[in-house]
Image (cartoon, rainbow, N blue to C red; front, side):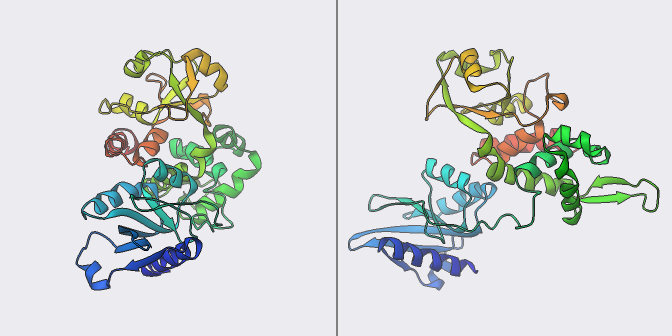
Length: 341
């Protein structure tokens, strides 16, 4: 479907579900404003809002900072992102950031002074994963997490790969075959009794892993948001004793680069939430700045125990897919210092 087709299909579906009319400016008028894909109005009677629109086949979190910068160039219109498909975790983040969105299926979160629309019950066909593929589902992402950090692991016995990945032994062969079929795995020493396998296009694989970690795995690890009872923990977080957890996201970025001041506090742990709440004096708070996620990798290959962060690949993934330019800058520093080797 073309971008124009996506736009009209989404607006037609919105009209069908809400009865609200829409108007799209003429093509030549849009072309004069190179930064955006469309200027439209949505509403009924005198209650109409004008929007500057960015159209995407499939919205990805790494695209969002650039999209928002582009939309910000055109004044006088509310921003609206229209997409054929938006992953559920990204919808939640867009809603929290108060960024208007509309899917072709009709799901939408749009709020202006004139109108308010929230639709979240329309069935959507996910277009991200091939129907037969397992490499990019949560199990495959855990497998890739281990392989990307320890490339020679691919040449080890399946049982060792399963242990490092934290997944079932029976899935390893299938995942290795898919990795090879997608062109990310090659073999050297053809004709020998035991050719060595190695990763191909590692940088591209890292970027894809980072994006799909955000949409396909992270929300399954999420345990909740909290706040510190001790207010000093927000400013002196580096001095908190880390017996049962590791710092992730912005905290990991601060520790690994010394160029980021955390606004949100991300914790990965293997212990129960109740135990960690007691240790850190945390209380549940849906608007809290502290988030707890489940640690999904084995301690046996934790490479950053000195600074007590999550592995650098995970720190990079969380920061590069953030909507915050500060985090993306820290991610690039981590990539240069740790991953481009």
